[in-house]
Amino acid sequence: MNKDLISYLIFIVALILSFILDLFVFSKKGKDVSIKSASFQYLFWVSIALAYFVYLFVNYDSHTSLNYLSAYFMEMALSIDNIFVFVMIFSSLQVRSQYIGRVLMIGVVLAILFRIIFIAIGIVLIQQFHWLMYVFGALLLYTGVKLFFENQEEENDVRDGKIYKFIRKYLRYTEEEAEGSYTVNRLGKTYFTKIALVVLMIGITDIVFALDSIPAVFAITTDNLVVFSSNIFAVLGLRALFFILQKAADKFDFLQQGIAVVLIFIGAKMFLEIIDIHMPVWVSLVVIVTCISSAIFYSIYHNRKNSKLEKLHD
Image (cartoon, rainbow, N blue to C red; front, top):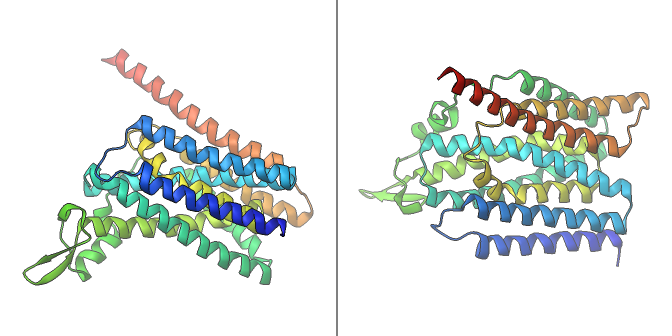
């Protein structure tokens, strides 16, 4: 049997088994997920992803496996940014904790579906129009610069957004949670509930982040197996990561800048290849890990420093 076919089969089997575990073991209806439990779950997802890295290293080569690892860490960093938007949606709409796990599970499924669709479209387009790679590079540079200087201190309320206003204007909508139902019948008319609104907004958020992350992963590698597997494995841990970060969303003040620098670096790397300057794959991996980890540690240091100053002034 073809080696690539075996690799795809292993990836698909791992994906199916992961979903079964998440549905019947990790996801317990109506039960709050503790940070300890979420941390063990996320460690499980990371272990699965790293096991696939080892498989690629043994059965392919260091170039393929390091590209996979770079793409995985890139997508993991972008998924953290995705989580903060999820936190904003749940807090703005004041969704009760017992419904969050199920909505997030739907969000993960939608994220995987959208990425499969967009990656497939991207592969076809790049094969037909290679110059699109440089369009992706320009998009990454623009997104990175915009993200770096974006004011993240501004409070956002989804009720002020176009999606919320559109639903209120054109659909029958009620603020009821209706025991987790997506629709409710009132006086013979069907209304969409708050849970339905949240699922819709999570789905749209998944699309927006997929449009950002797909160019980023193609900028690292165009290997179909690596693009698919790194993206999907990074998304699988979204639900567990949410429960870890939901109470610390405002603690990573400089993570946005770290992600921005990574996007600028990846975009610039693509344009350097035009003049025949090719960076070793390990350079991308080191830059991604260094930027993200430095941003996280500096955010923690900055917050602790501010806390000490506040105590001195009290």
